[in-house]
Length: 236
Image 1: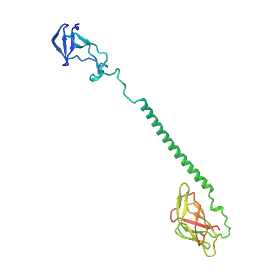
Image 2: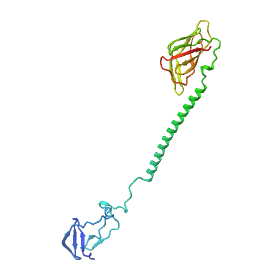
Image 3: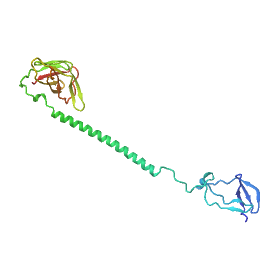
Image 4: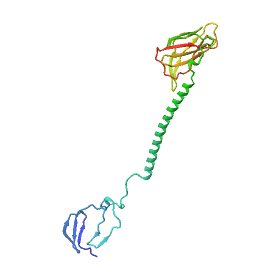
């Protein structure tokens, strides 16, 4: 069997002319295609393999991958797998839900704090609710924040301060009272500050002692400045 005349590739990369009977001395460089061939990247088998002089030929049955390795046509698509896309979408959904939960939680807490403050404001008794003709009542006295003052036979010691309670308002801190001899009863008095804040306080002597700690209701207003004036009115 003899191959038909034509150009055939040689091991050195050139084409050589086969006249149908023998090799000639005609060589040429391989002809480059004018347009890219989509199968070129995956290898295009030559029309014949073998040696035309011996008549041994075979036809390739598959296209080779670049570099001569066998591959597939069309080439596999590159990109993110469906599983990876699903994980990414799930992660985005979780992040969005967390952000929404934080925002909604913040709004809820803010509204709850405002509602609690309003409830306390309406529940805390004003000093005007206490009658002035209770036994042991006395004349109001005006002092500055931190100063001591007299409550009949009892004395409030100096050094008390104003603090704050989160979500409520101002508080009276560190106030103590010393009771006079023969007076073991509790004291009750109101405090009205010049910024509009007010509270009601009470104290009783500790067991076996002539002193006691003063407890005051939290105020729904901000604490006055240091040195602010306050009107103390004994109620009992």
